[in-house]
Length: 305
Picture 1: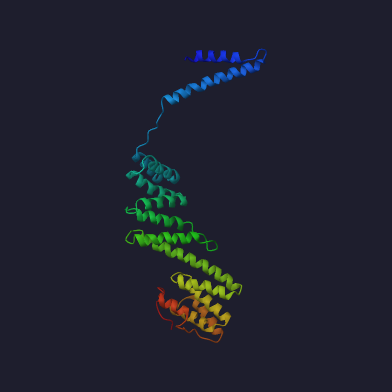
Picture 2: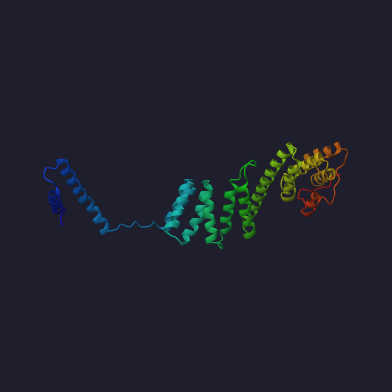
């Protein structure tokens, strides 16, 4: 039916519904409603008659645009979005596989670490046998590593970083990222040791010697290759001397001197033991001695004269 005829028909119907004597504004309102229905019907017919489809961009075009934004513009967030489009528009393609890894990298550079971990994890899950799987796993560990807080705060991110980086060493020991992963693991472990030392020092200052010893023991037994182990041995000497457990204090000082003879911490430990009328002397049955016998310290270079 032509629009004009449809409008006249609706007008006639409305006139029949109008009660004689009704206010003029009601008539105008109803007529406007009728016109609105007619206007809405026009685009609706057009929509249902023909659906417009937006074609996808070629995968290589999207990928190269992402590379341009990444390398030339240094706009990492926009680059990540472009790589995501490759996966969205061309899933399961080879371009999508490459773009997924680039999404993880671009988000890492943008400091969007949650997004980087998510994309990298997805890559490792979907393509575990890929030559780039080692790098994706390394990105996961690196993203956690970048968020390691200072020693006064919770070290959950540090533990996650170590776990993810250890996966690189375990699953991809021959990859070019294995050595870098090991270095980051050592630095992350140093952070965990620092956390234990911070709590131990605080306990020592409060004269909570047993609690302090437990913290320093963790450093000596679990983080022996970190830079904190020397101070931990001194603090053990101090705590044990305060408790009157002289043989353990002597052992802590002796082990410190044997493994780190040039350490400034050893000089303090030596003076502390001497002030009580004793000499550093290692008790081979002590847990301190057994800890160092089990895991030889890489710092030991010469014996204490």
